[in-house]
Image (cartoon, rainbow over all chains, first blue to last red):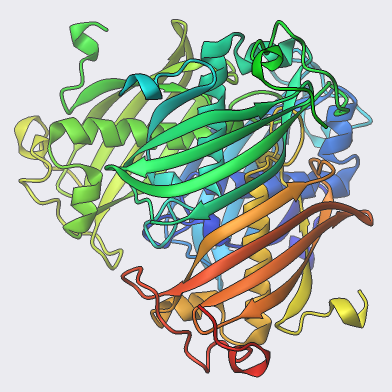
Length: 144
Length: 144
Length: 144
Length: 144
């Protein structure tokens, strides 16, 4: 992995081996399972940046997916080793946008984007605690 | 469905259509997914008997699977219509045993048994509230 | 259900009860599982229109998701009864676009769009057989 | 890991981080997901022993779960790091028995056993190819 891919909390890469139970009768990674891969990639990005997502939830800070788009360009198969490259594209006090590229053997198979919203235990939007999400204040102006 | 299969809280039957996302590269219902079918069958049995499982959890009463055995006798395929026949085999103040038979087109495909334990919000064993599980006091002597 | 919602092969509605195993630690339908609901809704739409998807695959005709976007507007919870309203927005000889609205108790919770591509057993694009997808020639001009 | 735990094709250990999407509203690894962990552990055991399961399927050799029992002794939670220790207990020309112990932080959380049957592409029992499953002839007498 190059320096560029190093997980520094704002961008990073994880590798996942496609499980049998994740594949459909075509022998392909089922298209819904990709979203779990994206979630895992975000979790690992966060783990490096500061608290784990488990610690966040224990502190009453939750992130829910508000929207997501995904483009399946080439199939991913059972037992493939998938690299998910993730980067934070934009953060505000209430939202985080991520972009994702999924590769198998150097081939770009999938592109995706998501927007997460920060909510409290009751599901209502809250401001992200500064200490929990240190990227927030750095390079993005507050936005709705 | 015969009277014998009618859901009366102690035995009942549910029908489930096998989903594409539940099938593996062999085109078969993945063997782990069967456990979700059993869970669904228990949930519907409970719904008839009294409170829904959702209401139970809201009241701080949880059921966790303590043990389970399953015998896969004939494959179940994508788009098959599966009948899960379930019966309560034994209840005590802290545990419930269920037995399950899964049929497709009249063929017995799977047999399973499970033991659930009743726990509180903290995961520790609790006595089942009598009003929530009325079968308890009827026909089963307390047991470990 | 109104006439407008009747499943006529180009639009329809299905109802799904949210399963325990589909929910995450927040008690919400996990965001990846929604894609399985959309798939189910497409399958039932197709079943009314003509062959089942199982029959299509047996005939060597497969549909793969090429792209998808989804907007989660309000949470869906364990045991909720979800209505998925689906309509075919556009069909060509190689692609089908669907739009979806998910409702719980009359509240619009989710909106989504997908594009499916028709492929052969080897995963390469093929023309949709006319008899298998009769909507194609009716009201939609061929497009790329 | 001690020598005893080294994956030598007949026994081995894998580590898995519990994913958010695998957990239920109690925040626990859903009991059906454990079976996917066992499957993964078998797959990695096999990978060391010889061909990967993917290669086996490509050669027309499939393994299906014929029966399974599992005992959930202590809960496994979101983000836990689980060690699955697996050993082949018995092999015949048509079947393989595995035993599994799942640990989190040194605590035994789960015990399980499974029996796999070797089948051909049509789902009918076949003899395991000797070169694909070299353990077979070594220490287990043929059995039904």
